[in-house]
Image (cartoon, rainbow, N blue to C red; front, side, top):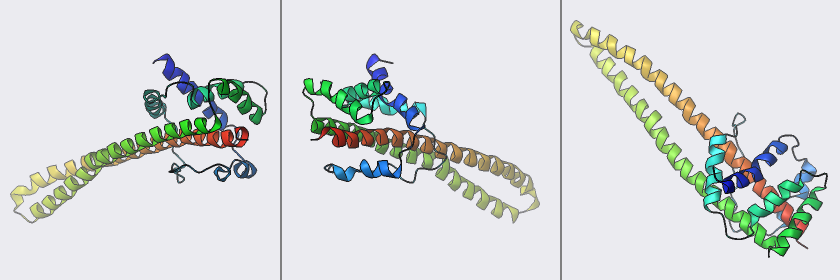
Length: 226
């Protein structure tokens, strides 16, 4: 794991733990509403219908972080700014003061609120690309592990129905195929659970990262745009 990857991951993972301790109130949502900033050309809200049992998964978080690392922009951008914010959050400071203090350093590196928001949107787009690739791969696995086996199951059931009408000599073959059906049904059930759980964990990891970035975008606009 590269030092750059560790720095990028630390900018999100620590904050993720904090986020579970204090959920935003309705007033916070209104104050931090994206309507207070210029809307990006394309915003995709990640999975508002996120399953309740979806869990953030370290494997998928690392995959997404690797994508961010591979698309890290040159110079001082949102990632460097977020690390500054994260470090300041360890201190007893108001949120607005944290962002303004981090921006004071960022400004010396040529950053502006608009450039930070544009950079953050860049990483949202990177994560959305990873989501698209994941969904395509997940759908392929769904076809291979579930739909193809369901087709096989139906074919086996049809074969059994035909053989039951045949002469007594085929009864042993029918019994053997019935045993195969039970195993096939168990495999389908197990595969379905694995695929759905994998999907829920990715969605949870993806939604958590995008939520953090969106919150930072709102805060940058709220506290830094004058």
